[in-house]
Image 1 (cartoon, one colour):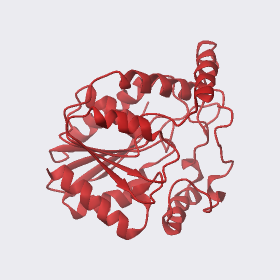
Image 2 (tube, helix red, strand yellow):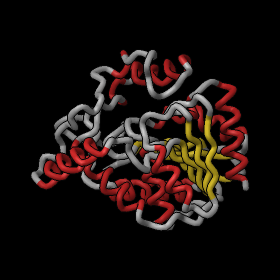
Image 3 (cartoon, one colour):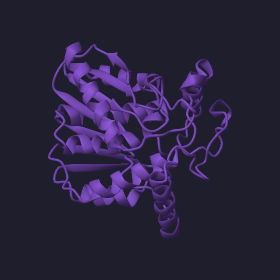
Length: 281
């Protein structure tokens, strides 16, 4: 499998590895790279397998599918090797969003060479009520073992055409301009769009979150940004993980939604200043 990566190489303070969330693509992190460059950082982002312009399931390129989250760690290793070959400046640090936060947490636990880490609404849990959680485990596990993992997850909130999704009621950002900017990428290249997750992805995600919740926190200093209007990931799972992380700080973003780094310009500047100060130590 060939992965797609984007590099913003200018920077003398080190390199920030940008781990995107589910459905995201490299170009969406151009704004992050610009803010980080103000603080002297180079950046590199990746299209995970099954999304962006990296290889996707042939039977349905719009479904978000992976059989095992360990596959994402293969993507991480490939990205690290690519950064080494490209000579990206050290030290290396991590900035991970949503699903990228789960991938990044495993990378830190497994010894990835990141000096410091920052997270935005990391997907360390999903906000499911007990009955829904039991149903999700049961149905996704049965699908996984029956070889039906590439089927759509029912009631996954799929949008037939992401370019037509309304700003009103969205769970990502309060900023209409940034919402339109994200959609402009999909209008320019519809192949970037991704629909809902497969039952295989759901089962893999549940298993990975369960595994990592039982492991000790990494040693790297950690900053986590979390909006007070978060509705996509489980806040309780974030609080539990950070409570056991010896060198961790939680920054609550008043009124922020899932994409706190995609809010208005003034807030983005303030938050990237926080992130940069943390990464610089």
